[in-house]
Length: 177
Image 1 (cartoon, rainbow, N blue to C red):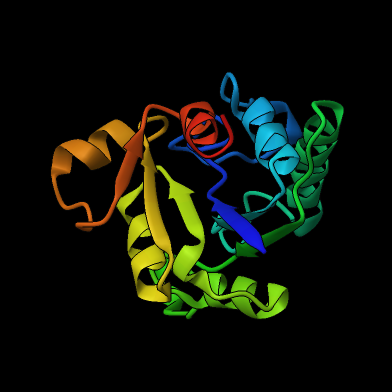
Image 2 (cartoon, helix red, strand yellow; image 1 turned 45 degrees about the vertical axis):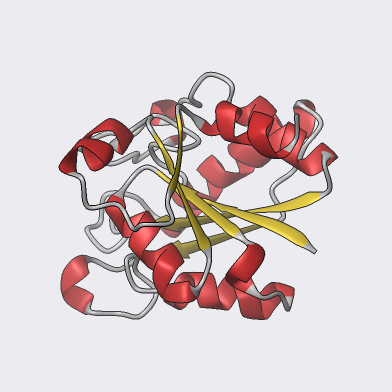
């Protein structure tokens, strides 16, 4: 099975320093929904794995998060694609859980649920935490330069095997030309 794991904020949709707290604040990055469709059409399973500490902070409810994910799924389906599953960590950094990226717990849960090895699975994100989680879980790290991506690249701490693309659309073009 071919599998791609995507971070959400800064990778699929625009991010905010104040969190994406409602459906009204959720805005896809140009070309990202079509990229999900291209990946789906190239027989990739697409999964979203996202840190969502806004839940623990009381800024959004789980229901509100699900509304955003339902809108993302509707947009992907309308473009001819789909998201096969959504995984999220609701905890803050101080909770010291195993699911919050950069720890690998969420990605390992994806591997278990889909019964797949992560060695040939791409983890695409815009932050160092995404890349670190990928490496810790044995997945292939991919940085997109949207969201925090340019700052992440400029900081120069990328794992050695990281591939870099301008955005999710460019990554999809690479995998599914």
